[in-house]
Amino acid sequence: MSRRNKKLTPSVLRRIIAEERQKLNETLEMGLSHPSEAPKKTREVDADKYADSLEQCCNWYQMCKLKEAKLERELQLVKEAKKRLKTRILRSVK
Image: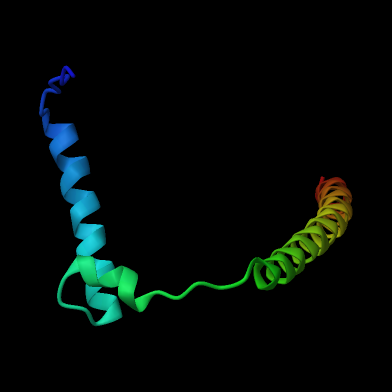
């Protein structure tokens, strides 16, 4: 089995340090003293609970998309009205 040597460039070192920092932060947030204790504290949740949550998120996303489209149409109307008023004001000033 041959091992492939990988050069430790500054960017690779930064990435490794960032990963380890993230692990330590997660450990501290859970109130543990070592990262190896994390699997003991985590619990498994059935997939059906995630399915309901995922469905709610998808529904909310669709509603947000619809609302965004409605707001974009309203914004377009406001921009057109603003443009007409600007031209009217400029004509009356001249």
